[in-house]
Amino acid sequence: MRPANQHRKGSFMNKLFRILRRSAPPAQEGAVSEEPRPAESASRADDRTLFIGHTRFSVHQHGSGYFNATRGADLGAGFSEEEYTRWLYSETRLAPRTEIFTTLSLPQLAHAAKNHDVVHYVSYSPSLPEHHKAQLKAAAEEHSFLRLNETTKPVNSTPSRALVNQALGERDHGSRPFGVYRLDDDDLLSVRYFDQMAPYVTPRHIGWWVSLGTGFSAIRMDGKYAYTRELYYPKSAFGPMAIAAKNDDGEIANLSAPKHTVMDKFNPTILDSREPAYFHIRHESQDSTVKGSVAPFYPEAMNRIIGEGPADLDKVADLFPVLAGATSLEPGPASLGVDLSKGPISLSRAAVTFEWKHEGPIALLLDPADGERLQANQVQVRLTVAPQNSGGTVLEEGASKFFSQGRFRHSDRDGTYWTYMPQKASGFGHVLPIEPPKGVKVTGITLVTSRSESLGLDSVVAYPLPARRS
Image (tube, rainbow, N blue to C red):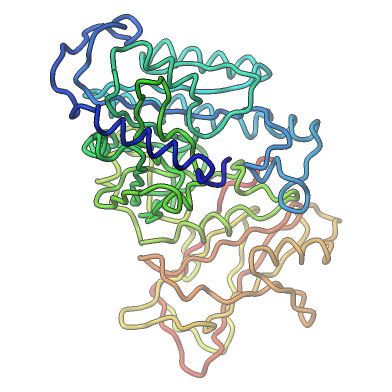
């Protein structure tokens, strides 16, 4: 990744000015091709806006500094090449990504691309397991905009110059501007993504970037999407787009991608957050969650997306029709929620303990009564734990380390693990994700206030969450 373009700033600006002088407005002239693939109409002009996209699909890049899984041990997982390959191509990691990309991300792009000229490249390594290659090839047969790029070269998030030139070579595009966007294999773009982006693809914006800051996020649970939230993340990795153009010298301005979080330090950046533009899926095999050792997934994932409040599920279905009927607001599978309190209760300094009979992670939801507000450090949650297997033992040191990553502390006095209920509400109550380490189960959940005033709760609900698959 180039830290900046200062070393070639002068030549870049000169070329940019030449492009701006020569570029025509986003052309309306020329016949729209009726052929299914642009490659079949190479010499025909197309009056639709051109977008060239790229997905880096589990490219084998051991030693790269781009990801937690490929960084050294001080900064990431520190995997050996053998460990990295085994992790990268494990079915636990690849299967959900292939499913999301081929059955959700690409059909969404197909909806969005109907009135635009879209070419989308997916890059992967020759070592990708064959049955995953087969699914990518089947997707390319189904979607005319999809192009497969099997490569042994290092791969950036945005398409390479060679891929962009390949797309431009299939059409008579001249020096007109076009959009270059990235899409991760486990994210979705709205059916109106290209409609939102098209107005910015103009000669005056060559050299600029565009970030659509508003979207949705949810946690993948057994093929469904729970805890669906609004998300505001300007300058995110969810579909940022560069506005590029080719000059008479054959060079392409604005292909180098800065780190997405600081793109505005290197290029003028348009931020448009008026309408949700992406759906970000959280799941346990994401590289951002890889720390080099087993760590709780649900606490990290839920705390990241508490964001702006519950999503409007009707709007989700409108903008992301492939997810219609598969999303929910609850912090766990809605049908599995257990009403621990059996109705309203008044919580005081007298502890209330609920028996818990399920194994695995839990999402605890407290809903204060009307007019009641949960204060910081007001409600303490204590967990009684036991080994999953009869006759086993809970290794306190290992369990304490794991629980501490989920913000629980160990009590030497009674052997419980405890934390305070989060003060920030989710929009329909206060949510606490609880994830015990492997071999340990929660057998009891105790609530107690730390203040003299009682707290009225309309309900205390716990959701059993899918257990870690690896």
